[in-house]
Length: 343
Image: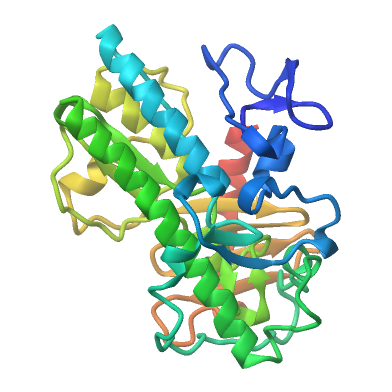
């Protein structure tokens, strides 16, 4: 989770590895950001977060890709690919791009796409009624916002969304540089590439600017797999989980796995584009959720439940738990069985 995979106050202590024995090398090209902690929330030209309230939540500075941390990470990834290709052996390389992540900073040219464009309306922008996992967007609000709140300031809300989009375009360009290097090294045709994100993000939906909820916007994340054994251009709406990435990589590279492993290969999804019926589980603090292809159930520690019907246009704006107790019980039982098995 920490850039470089180490712990300690600045996330740089070699004796405190987050995942011991998992990696041959832990690299974090911190440069002017001094240490991985500074790198994580770094803005242009080595600016480090000390007090979030003193750091702008939005930024767009002219310059090369490497004036922000992801450009440095990509430069290091390209050097590693060159070395790995020269070694001529199978390899596993994980490249962790930070953007889009607070604070929303990216080189100015990635913002040019969005400065004057018209944005779509924010879906269901109001704070939900009743008990939910809504929160006051504390991670976002603690930065310098010039005393503006996107929930009450449409112009500022659009500015936030444009800067977020610029961060996405910046990250996309860094992915493009890595894929181009794979092509140049003649590795693309025999390399499995997985692009995935660790969570989603609210941009005003449900009146939230952040993650840390159990709504769809927080939990749905990007997932693209390409390479030998994966049909190009195939898409699926099947519900899958992040824990499915590992057994998928093992299958595609011919590495055997234990039968007790969590997750299942994603190959069933691309072999049958109409496949459905899976579930994905998530949790945060005092609530847990499961998402099927038709419903989301959220169970609070108090026992209160939310049930949302994704077949309805109202989606996750109307709690229908009282109307469908059988669905609640079925999904609750399945969720508890999954969590018991995981323990």
